[in-house]
Amino acid sequence: MNPQQIELVKSTVPVLRENGVALTSYFYNRMLNNHPELKNVFNLDSQNSGRQPRALAAAVLAYAEHIENPSVLAKAIQHIATKHVSLDIQPDQYAIVGENLLHSISEVLDVPFESDLIAAWKQAYLQLADILIDVEKQKYAALDQQQGGWAGWRGFEITEIQAAPAGQLFTVKASDQQPVTAATAGEFISVKVKVPNHELQQPHQFTLSEGPIQHYQFLVKAEEKGTEYSVANILLEHYKVGDQVQVSAPLSK
Image (cartoon, rainbow, N blue to C red):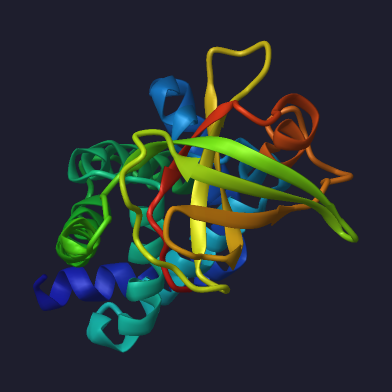
C-alpha cells in the first residue's frame, strides 16, 4: 500500500468506531443474500444475535488503526486463522468476502465504488487476505500431517450420549474407523449438523472434555435464546446415538 492509501484507510477509523457494527451487519446480510451457499459456512445464530457482526467490526477497526504495521496484530491474526481453519474456510471464499465488503463500505458510507477510498480499502483487504490465507495454508498442512490428522470436515458417528449436570456429554468416533488425531481436554472441534426443515448445515465449536485416540467427547448445553439454527439445541433435540455429524480436527484456542 502506498502512503496515500494508508492515510485514506486511517481516515475511516472514526466512522468505524461509530458505525462499525452497522457496516458489518449490512455486509453479512448483503453477502449471505448474494451467496446463500455460505449460510452453510457461517453460524446463523451468531449472525442473528449480533455476535459475529460485533466481532468483525472490532477486527476491521483494529486493522484500520494498525494499517501501517499489521504485524502488531499477529496474535489476533493467528486467532482468526485458527477459527477459519476449524470452519474449513478456503482461499476462493476470500474473493466473495472482499467484493461484498468493499460494496458494503461504498453503500453504507455513501462513497462511489470507483473512489480512491474504496481502492485503498481494496488494497488493505488484499493485504490482509494474503496474510490470512498464508497462515491458514500452514495450519491446514500441519493438521493433515499429524498422525490420524485431517484438514476440513470428516464424518463422525455419535457413539454415546450421557447426562451431565450442565447438559449432555456427546462422544463421537470417526465413521471410517481410522485413527484420529490425539487431543487434550480444552482443545476444540467444530461440529456441523443438518438443520431440521431446511436444506442447510450449521457449524458450531465445542470444547473437548476428553480427547483420547479414536474418539472425542464434548459437553452440549441447551441455549435458551437459541434460534432454529442453534447447533447445541439441534444436537440435544434431534440427534441420537448412531447419527452422523461432520467434525473438524482438534485445535488449541
